[in-house]
Length: 258
Image 1: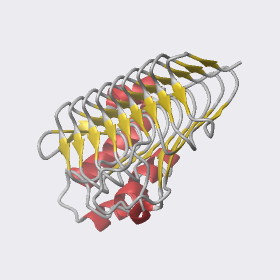
Image 2 (image 1 turned 180 degrees about the vertical axis):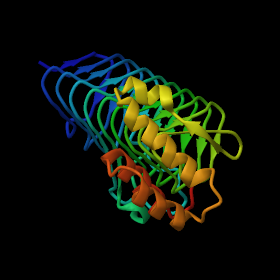
Image 3 (image 1 turned 180 degrees about the horizontal axis):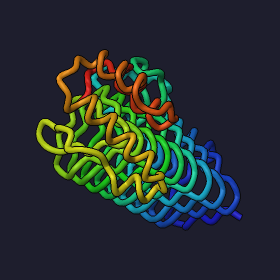
């Protein structure tokens, strides 16, 4: 059965599945949908056309689904969709989409969103990411999977962060960060590969070495980007991890960090 504390306010038009817990003084607005076994701690606010999947945990003072911080937003019925088994810590804010970005902000599964981090309108966050305290994603940012975003990182609008990348604390990221890479600084520059992260994910040493060779060709050679990618495809083994790396760079609209 749904457990709602007597001091919580749940709009009758909200949809709460079985085994949902809503703590003291939390507010759940009309149009919100919450999956089973999700726990909402005290003083959280969940609003708008927001969907949370199963087994999420929302900590006190999180603001989930409030109106985008975009002056172009005029109240359109945009959405925030959050998957399952995510942890949303204190004072985290997540905004729904806008007409300029497809009307939806998406967060996948098993993400850890630490205190005070912000996910702006029209962002897409994949699976198993860690976004640390005070990090800010501007609108339309894409975070793929297994990414670590350090504390107080700022990510510019429309930037993409590739799978298994790591962003050092305090970095200001204004260009795309390719998969598997380590980027730090203001403005962020590449500092090599996220080798420790790849080992933790169980990447074979031969795969890591192949990615390392591709990194050197792409960023340490004197070749133009198109020529470097052609060289990588021609000379290195055709493995899925390498194809992801090359495709990400080839498709970059803002350019990549170097």
